[in-house]
Amino acid sequence: MSESRLEAGKQSGCFCLRGDLTFDTVAQLLASSQSLLAASPALTIDLAGVQRSDSAGLALLVEWTRSAAARRQAIDFINI
Image (cartoon, rainbow, N blue to C red):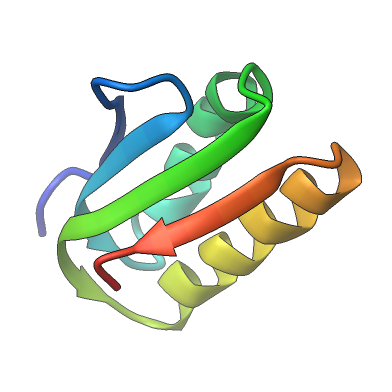
């Protein structure tokens, strides 16, 4: 298992997701990402660094999409 983390990219609102998205990692990732993602008017999340995922990883992306919609933010996932 690799540590999962969300890192700020070079451009505002761009983030790189790295590691595994599994039942073991997504709860901590969700908690640590909330304030980071809320600070940008629009989001682009690059998934190229994701090594492995299970249904919890998909649930995380759905939750980020739901949260962005509630904040009226555009959200895009790239390199899925």
